[in-house]
Length: 289
Image 1 (spheres, one colour):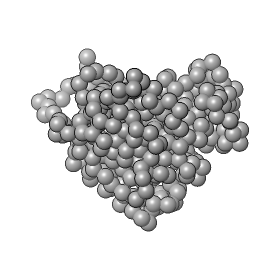
Image 2 (spheres, one colour):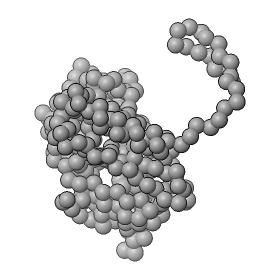
Image 3 (cartoon, one colour):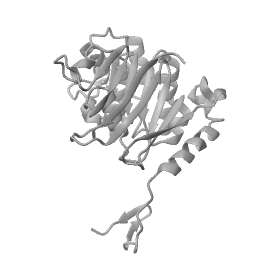
Image 4 (spheres, one colour):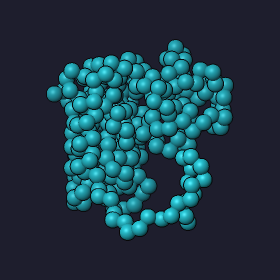
């Protein structure tokens, strides 16, 4: 296999919200050129923390990262901070919290263009219009983000990152809050337009992983002293197919992902009694405080 675009060795991962104690230990992860990799695992297993660390947001407790030809060491003796060692790398990061990726003072079209300008990247106007259409925002070009729904703002943040045409994309739950049909359009756009890019994205959606990813990495943190990663590789018959084409034959791949996730999911705590619920109407319940 070709040299990895990204290889993390022996990483100790801090929680993305901060803290001195490692959440994960001895992490090994590699991404290869032009592949799309889904990172999955139970809630709280460290998916966001891993992406934050690989993007240079959160410093690891141990280990090194080789990324886009550069070696990043948490124990750097050159006087440079961990974050500054990522300066100039051709990578793009999408935060899980949409408000951290939104420019509230500009409309949709200018928002996507501004993402390029802030990175000193020449904007591709045809690509911007294509991305806006794929995100279902063509009729809202002048809308400020505050006029958009939560799902629309999320898609705006995603396409602003995609418009940078980066070599490496690190995306934390990029498709959350959007309808299936819109997501499928975005999957198709990524497959057809960004084949030169390498993607790592976190998700809880098995179908999303099976439709878009070439590999799926499932975090197994049942043993606190180390993080085990289960890898599920897309069948060769699906590997180069578009998400639309995969729809008719991805069930086996999705089931392989489900089987691993069912194995590593922590057991539910035992419950003794169910609280009473008062039905207010169809699909609506009032839960006791």
